[in-house]
Image (cartoon, rainbow, N blue to C red):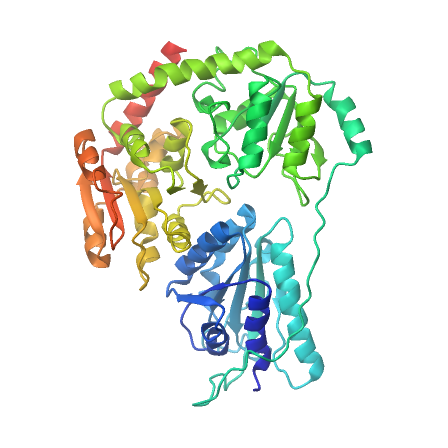
Length: 558
């Protein structure tokens, strides 16, 4: 077949362990679409909205820890992938982005669905690869094979991330009636062998000398997947009172031995005497807490970051050492080496224990609003459920509320609201366990096409906080003081979730107070054939007042 290298592309993906592809309808991409759709070892799904498709693919890849293929037609379709590609890049999630294109001679000639697709995603992909525009010469076929191998290897190489293959296609690109695709033809596979970096004995000796100069060590894990071995080692470090471990909810490393309520007291100068570290040790990606970031920047502590390879951001403006090794190896080494300052440890633990003791009663005394609503809901979510958090207030409320046992997932690569629902849908397609999306109304309605497809997701549970506005802007000092707040920052809207639930055939329950939430939660996690929505309505100004009231009560107790 004249387009055999396109068929081979799907074969190479399969042989290199890729088992999922998300396709969006189009004509120019027909041979690519058919190659994946007809491949017996690859599961394909069709999502019409390319922006949603890309986030769904990212949600699948994030859970399976392996690349997912994305395929779309030429033109603006490719641009709609961009938000998810940027998110995947900063979250280090592998995607194989394949865009069909017009042949190079037809670019800028006013041909239909034609834009400049070369390097369209800029620096938000790990690599760009231009496929040959014809396969008449053996070298072109060799080149096509090499491109696919190199792209997949690069996507998987630490730190993982998206890569882009742009494929110019000339007509005819539909197979003739009865023409079969031959996936049995041998294809060349280029397999990398990745060696894990380890600390040498000389490295350990040098680090031991360096560590001896620090007594107040603060470990701050960033966003990552749960890891029971790392969790156990951190707990051992904390129980032996050698270091302080501060964990945001997205670190997935919270426990009874970590500092989980830091967002309530870090940054308060009246309370922070004795909290300043002299060494910050980080691994993973970003953290949520702005208070913690500002506190650590002011501390002027040295900062070491641990990861296998790749660039390291200087988040706290004090990066002094990058250590390329496995995190677990370093933590075990640290456990054998560090000598702590007890007053530093006790200062953190005293404030944490005060928060654990006083916070539940404060929340029970608070007026009803989003804060209390989320607190009630979190107690009902099964430990086996994965929790997807939308950005803005949803992720912050959960971070305020302390330790979580469930896996927490949130698009904190770019921290946008645009694909929260779609990412949760992608996750739900990978598991039979419950997936709970906690979202605000702006993020929910912005990404409503997450549900515009034929695939049943009966394990998806959606808790939607509807205050009919972007409530976070009332909590940001700048916009909150402006007379244009409601129209130009909050962007008030009148939608509710009932119509969407009816449109897509979802179960639906409306709650407006604590009692109706509890009623809605009674059978929320019962087995169902459809997704379920629990919509919690409240008032944006009232939510802002409640948050301020809770903060004031916390300061009184501390």
